[in-house]
Length: 324
Image 1 (cartoon, rainbow, N blue to C red):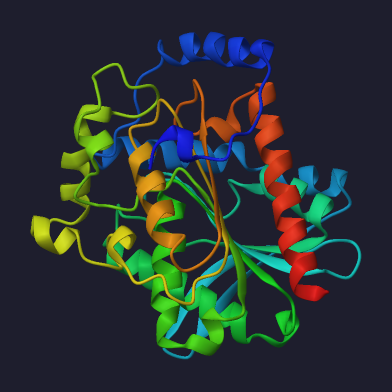
Image 2: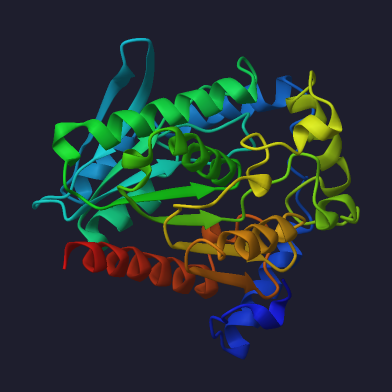
């Protein structure tokens, strides 16, 4: 799938210039690497310190978060729930990013608060275990457990469900949908999937394998080796099997999707190839953002704000389409 096949989001010359200026700052920063266990643990500790005032941030918006352990008798997983001030019109199941090795359910609070307020939804963010202590397969099991709980819980009965995943969370979101095919009645309840620059082939797509040393934000040349370290017992052929690599799954019965990736992201082919396969089963809107690196929705630029606004509008439209 090429850029010309993508439905374009329009950006002004000034917005593109602002993104390119920000890229110059990114180029001076160290690349994110997941090939050792010490750095992720340090980053995780710093992340938790930065989140100490999270409750006060929520209160400023008239919201609060409930942290609870959910799941089935044989499997339990922590989640963070943010509810709107009025009756929820839908529910979002959120899978955070962080390269499988850092992050937690609170790290997306800013994005989720905006989603709660703009879309009038409840957001359930999954606090899945990290790869520093748990195999990727264990993380996938956590996420599937949370999804099954949400899709059978009385609080969310009858509400449209949107699955959202970013980066490694995009991988876990897609893998979760594939896992739900064991329970077709649960998969049928999912009304949409919003996926930001996910990893869908753990053997490495062509854009990953050809990533140059000057890749922004990510350690481009080291990504294939990082995938191998995440799945040390798997062969290359096993890494290409679904749901470990969602790209090779069966998408029949899947919901409509909105997918986004950056033109400068080594993972761009993951999104474009997934969209090409997914659209045989359900409508897919895919955007390849010009001059954009991995993680662009977090950048302090107008393009990021416009993308997030578009995504919240898409969520609202999907919810209304189901409820009407």
